[in-house]
Length: 120
Length: 108
Image (cartoon, rainbow over all chains, first blue to last red; front, side, top):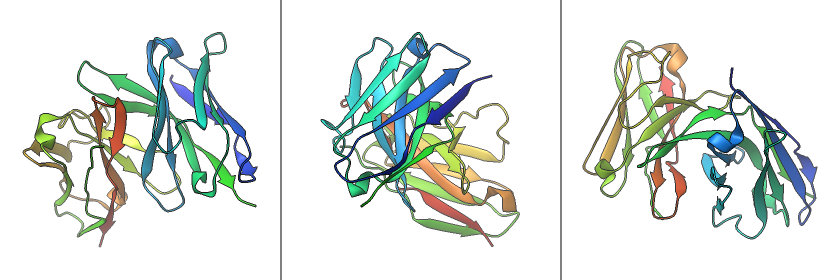
């Protein structure tokens, strides 16, 4: 059974840092594109970041230079290091597994989400 | 970046058919995926690659995509279908996942 279990999150001061973890079971993280999607309070889904099978990464413009996605293959876990947090980074952060073909990708598995609140 | 436009809300009576649109420039040339999100839950893919359904998704849910509009159709709507629905494409140029703004389906 595939499971994505996030941890981390909570209340962080603006300008602060936080690291989210996503422990994956059911498949090796190196076999899939893995990513993070967030959802602000009462808002829609927003793409944050992806780490490809080969380990390269990509980011939404809104977080580029502040957030870093990474993985630990031995722990089968992916991470999102969030620096210089802003009030508008407040959101539920979902870990996501992507199913990709040569033409497209979609999210086939989601974590339960973890809330990050950036507020003073 | 690529923009997907959805109506904020759609209302439908039980047993009727609901259509939720997703507009984008030449979206018919792309693969569109649809997610259902109920309150307090993570999203769930209900249609992938325009019109395919994952196992376990009822055949009341169907999708189409042509020209500048993709459409999610829900037949014989039930109270349990009340949720937010999001369309999504993968923008190859930027390798970014793009979501529509979401549509809240209300079952009257």
